[in-house]
Length: 121
Image 1 (cartoon, rainbow, N blue to C red):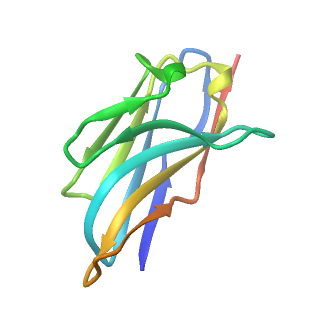
Image 2 (tube, one colour):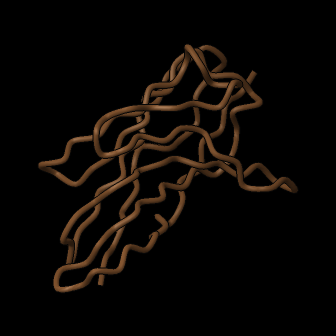
């Protein structure tokens, strides 16, 4: 089995910063794409940022220039550095990781448990 554990959410004021972490553990053979998504109340879950195994990144237009996704392959961890936070960034943030388990040829996605980010004005 594979587990994803997120940390780093919380309450921050307008213009503040937070850093989210998502660590994968368990029966991991290889990790491919790693991503962060978010879901605000009453809205769908949207992609925030993605980083592929080679390090290429892509961001939602709403966070470009403010958020940075990175990964530490040795620690099986993905990060999301969030700067210049706005009230509209308030949401539950989820990590999503594509993993090939040990002794398997099959790649599937796993979700973190979600962490709340609240930005006050």
